[in-house]
Image (tube, rainbow, N blue to C red):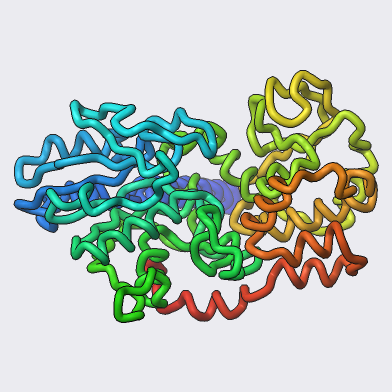
Length: 433
């Protein structure tokens, strides 16, 4: 072998060694990074519960409140030697997420770790009463949210904050990542004339905040109820930050296991699906996979022209969404026991670019162009109309889609009202890079 061949062989070996070293280092880096995210409860346990040492606590949580080891927040507190849980309060769906959307839960219907849980979704009650909090020194809130304004865990946080503010109880919010990430802000800001339990504060449909950040915003913007002097209440609030999470991260980047947060949110794909299709379910135009095995990940109707619909939708730009033609038969809900022509939505790994409310509007407009008969008022009940308006946060979208001749571009503008102003305002409350 001559010198030139020796040189080329050595160069190839060096190149391969460099590539191998890079791959090993990158693997170590990504594994270290992906496995370094901690929830607020992990941080609190790591600090040996120092923030709440010696306190009697009311814990607001459900089964989504877990350490990254999957130990429940309830068990973590029960094992602590320096603080005491006096009661557990649960949000909509109950502790184990078994109750259907809107289903009222009886008091003490569930027992967690020998402690009787009290529902904050029973007998039309949404707010802790004075008697629920009078035996405690502080309240701890630990629930996994999904980053959608209409999901009621944000509303539960609001009313817990308001009760703590009125009754003088400190509140500790154990923060958790937003599974949709912290970059995307999408969908109009709620008009306060339509405030409800599915839209409690004036934020966009997709707000890109953690519940800890939302708590700071609610306090800082004066959104709690007014006291007897007419001033907005202030909660004595402490947010225990999640560690290692950054705004660009979505759920997969945390490497956490998804624990179902409610009956129809069993997976992270259903979170993205609800962000995309949730308002269709409220108006009842189509089945959205609720009642089938892929809730919020499908759109279907017996008469849906799938090929024309997909062609119309593809004329718009829908990042991170693949549409798969299919047929399915819902077990319950809209079109129960009826064969439906449908679309299965598959969300690509490029979820950071996912703008669900914008995509939702584009799909609605395509559907209206192909199937105007779906948009006849006779097909929509008063209850469906009311819920659609509440979840959208305005009556303007309903009017534009069903009552007036409005251009598609104008509908898209309505759907983004207030987003830029919110993006600027929220900077004051962001906890993560």
